[in-house]
Length: 268
Image (cartoon, rainbow, N blue to C red):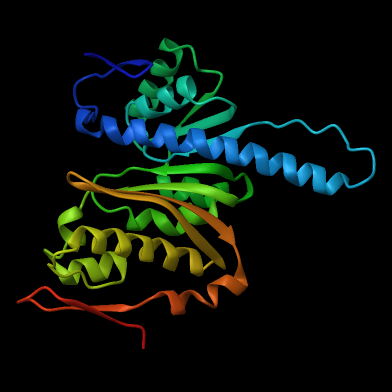
């Protein structure tokens, strides 16, 4: 089967996962990374200018963004990245399945972007841990179910100020269907309430921050959405040991009446 989406045309043999409902997710991600690319370039220019000062500046070339798609499947998302996002240095597209990794390579060649996309066949967590010395500007995690097993390694393999894109498809858990499961995966008890989708997004952001805190990093949420059956968040991750010390002051417990749905907050 051949699928055309956006600027990409990819082959999808039987058994390879493809979810057409997530096309909006991919469109949104491309829009966010495009904007981040502009910000990243401007920050590079500002840093280069500041470093040069009054002396003659050295010639420094901007190499572009490096992106990791940790769970690549067919490589459709990465092909669209390569075609639709300017100023890219490389895209590492990973999948644990050797057949999927082979398909990623074939689809990259089919779309003429094999010089940008670098297929990888590895466990996603191991790959991100191993990339601590060869970091990325953008990491995209889009699993089936929760992303919590990937968060700790993801925050470590980003450059300072890098962009982390996270999807969780277990929205029912985040919305309070299984409070104990939510606590185990996200470090907070989710309850059924009027604002349960916002609650789910905040729990996911909390889990990302907890993972970042263990490595003296803080997150800056840029965009958080609850769409259909999944949550999608975009955050910047920055190194800040001093910032981690103030994270507790940004947390609160929410009390919600099961009758009238009135909510109250407690920071103590």
